Image (cartoon, rainbow, N blue to C red; front, top):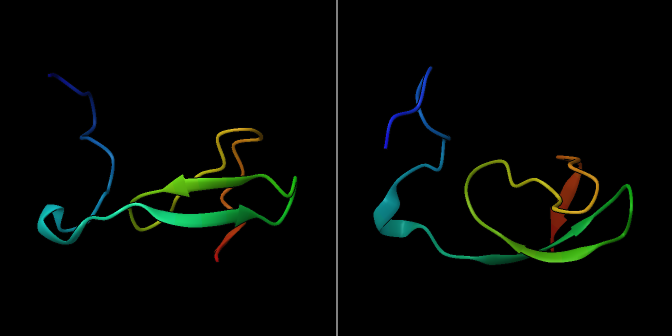
Length: 50
């Protein structure tokens, strides 16, 4: 797969696990991965782990 400018920053792939998050903007609950997960509903990065 080719990505211009590099791929997403997901951190160390060996320790990558999905975690539960809640968006502080739209209150959507979702599973996310990586250092800076993004809400799939509103695209905000203002999220907290629950």
